[in-house]
Amino acid sequence: MYSNFDRIVIDPRLRRAEPEAHVSGPDAGRPHLGRYRVFSTAGTTGVRGLFVEDADEFAVWIGTSLRGLASWGLAEAQLQGRPRIAPWLVATSSEAPTADMRRRIVEAFGLEPLDFYGTTEALIVAASRRGQAGMDILEDLVVVEVVDEHGRPSRRAPPATRCC
Image (tube, rainbow, N blue to C red):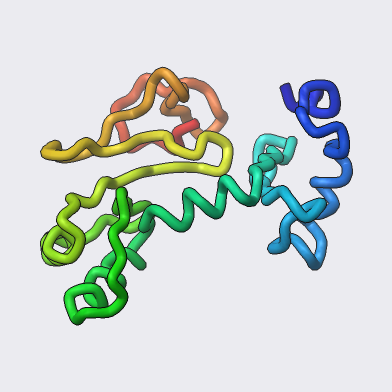
C-alpha cells in the first residue's frame, strides 16, 4: 500500500514526498497544507511508515478524550474543582496506572480508565475492557508474532527477543 501512496490518497495535493519532507522538517508540529497532521514511524523495517490525519478530526478526538497518565493529573484537578470537564473516554497508554490512580480517575470522572497499547503503524494493538484485567490483542486489526533475534518466528515461550 505504501508504494501506491500517491495513487490511493484521497486529497490529490498529498504526494508522498511532501508529507515525508514535512514530518522531517522544522514545521512538523504544524498541520501540513494547513489541514493534515502527519506522523511517521522510525523506519526500523527499512521503510518509514507515513500516516496522515485530518487535523480537525484529530482535534475533536483529542478534545473529547483523556489519554495517558496526564488523565490522572486532570482527575486530581477535577476533584479540586478545576477544571470541570466531562470526557466520554479516559484512556491510559505506555505506563500502567496504579490502583490509586485508577480509583481517583473513577472518582473524578465516573469512568473506569481503559488501557491501550499502540504503535504509530497500528494505532491500537491491544486494549482493555471494562471489568477485565489485562488487554486483548485486536486480532482483526493486527498480527502479533513473537520472533527471535533474527526476525524468525520464535517457538520458545516468552520472553522472546521482540514482537512484530
